Image 1 (cartoon, rainbow, N blue to C red):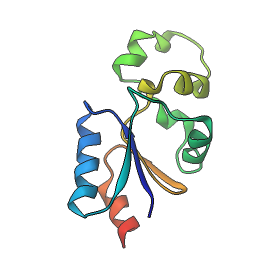
Image 2 (cartoon, rainbow, N blue to C red):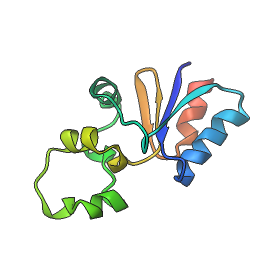
Image 3 (tube, helix red, strand yellow):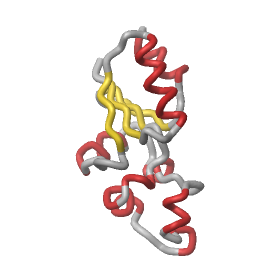
Image 4 (tube, helix red, strand yellow):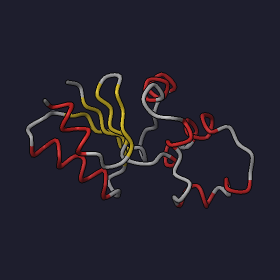
Length: 111
């Protein structure tokens, strides 16, 4: 099992995801999106499990700051150029990924 958590330290769901894996003694790699974004290869891997449209946080502060609600934009380009547009946490286990706090799915990974 190779767990990666992409999120921000300020996100409560990201902290809950970290706690979920810590409580079960499962090691994970955390990537703070406010410090370093997701590479194109990682994004393509995530897109095998999740749709591109579901990854962008249309209710988030960054989306509003950039006025993306009123623009035509390339979602993949925007996500790669501004990682704070992602819904968080994005939790990946090899080729499977989830968005948000999804303990019911993560429990299946552990079995």
